[in-house]
Amino acid sequence: MIDKTGFWNERSNWTYDSAHQTNAILTTLSKHGWVKQTGRRLRYGHFEITTAGTEKVAELVAERMEAARQIAAAESSPETKAKAEAIYRRFGLHAL
Image (cartoon, rainbow, N blue to C red; front, side):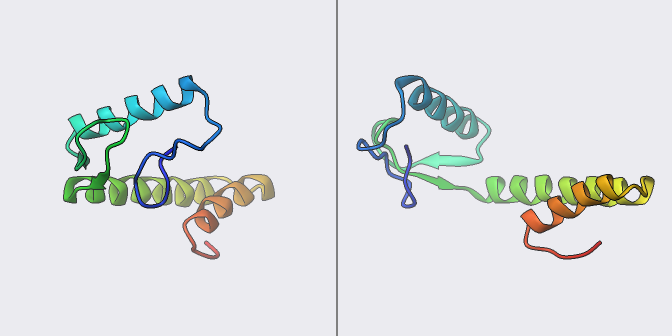
């Protein structure tokens, strides 16, 4: 598992499959230029988010926020509004 500092934590209880999936995700993100590897080996590497990665995260957050607004506007049911508000709360925002 990659800890808060971005280093691989060998003491984690992840299975090999989880570790393999994490490496695959980091490799894909790296190919898109969203993260860069600063270590020698993938498994023990240190990754940093790039400017392009930061912009992509902002874009994805904006898409989620817009989806929440559309849900709230299109549907007036309490259940649907609750789902939209949950998305807002996840990003630290309040009421629609």
